[in-house]
Image (cartoon, rainbow, N blue to C red; front, side, top):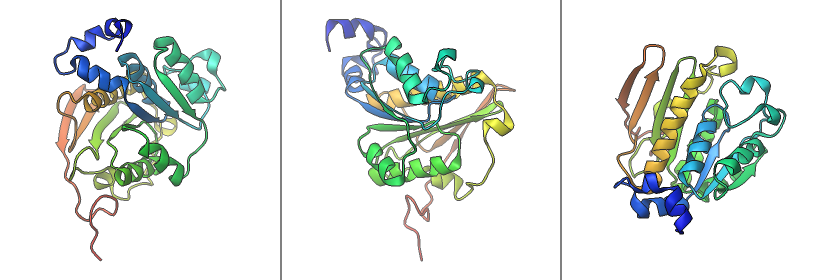
Length: 249
């Protein structure tokens, strides 16, 4: 770490839970962000600002006018641009020392598994169960920690999966309930709610990468922005889970 980096990240380095060693771990980390929408926007911006060395930005969508209400990594001038390209431009402005890699096409399972295997951490910022289940399977198979977030209407949730032996995975929580219609396009979303959930995801990612604190492993954090109530539920691994358990015949 050079003198400029010591100054740039000085306020984080002052934290005894991070210190120089934790900051160096952030600089050496490679993180895969799946989805550059309402959640991926604050995640990408905060991880870049905090000094994560490499960010892999994956999204096959393009910036739309309706995205700008909550997807703060994108700007009006980036409408119709691929979201990874748009996000990378903002990240360069925030921290030119953060290396970005853009994936602008939909990945099949093999490609996804390959990208997960190269990452130290994965953040699921997608908005549908099909993607979430696929990301979870790849993380379980490769033994890579997963920080999962979702937000809709006034509510959101965050959890950490696959970060230690015996920890539950995303499939343990939801089973096969992948046909629920939970898209923002059909239900709406308050803009700051995505910022709250994305910021918590970024916090959990920085904790996991630096070794600071206790992650949301085996817990589901639920936030209701309308009543501003926060709850935490304990999660247990399902021994019969077809993804991370040992299913019986």
